[in-house]
Length: 260
Ligand SMILES: C[S@@+](CC[C@H](N)C(=O)[O-])C[C@H]1O[C@@H](n2cnc3c(N)ncnc32)[C@H](O)[C@@H]1O
Image (cartoon, rainbow, N blue to C red; front, side, top):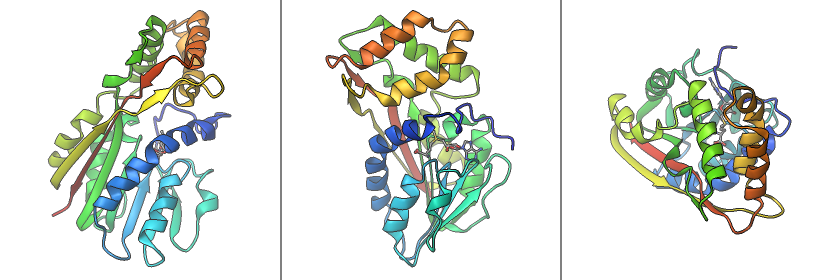
């Protein structure tokens, strides 16, 4: 199945990595969705659904009369969630569009930034909306990714190596800031956006899993390409466990718009 997504869903700690992200971002996502005022029995699509945490929250939100389609190229975490409200679809959105005109809400978080075909995929998601339906897209902008106190050259080196390594593999670390413009270009109206940089404290026991598990998964490529060396990796892990460190995660930019 063609996908070009650079992270490996079969990596041994991928579930933990995704869980670390959902814990950080699910409350903000649901607060935005609650403001969108969906109709009773809303039909929703959760694209690049990952662990399905948002699909489950959406199912609770729309109630028994509603529907949630959870789409991912890899449905290993989603399959157990299928029930009367949640339908799981193994589908590559770069190859197969959603059925047109069907959804009251389409949500995609931490997906389009990864896909080189992001402009086409965004246009096809917009086509999937029913009249009045909302598209909510959330991606990271790395503008705040190097913010740490106290300052640390190691942190700056490793985070910027990750950003540039991922960029070389089709990732766009500045896509999120363009979302309002892209939603307008897709023919949608009532465009809005917010940007939030969550503060994350280093932790002597748990470290900073959002960073450490990304760096660990990318480490073979980062080391082989000379982006960082083994000493950088060791110092980065130590830093994530030094409870004096305060960092700000990359900016989560959430942008929404509706079909007229
Ligand atoms: C970084 S994870 C984000 C998961 C979830 N949206 C969240 O925010 O917790 C990206 C997800 O998109 C899925 N994905 C990647 N490429 C895809 C594609 N072309 N079509 C559908 N899903 C895709 C991956 O398998 C993965 O589950």
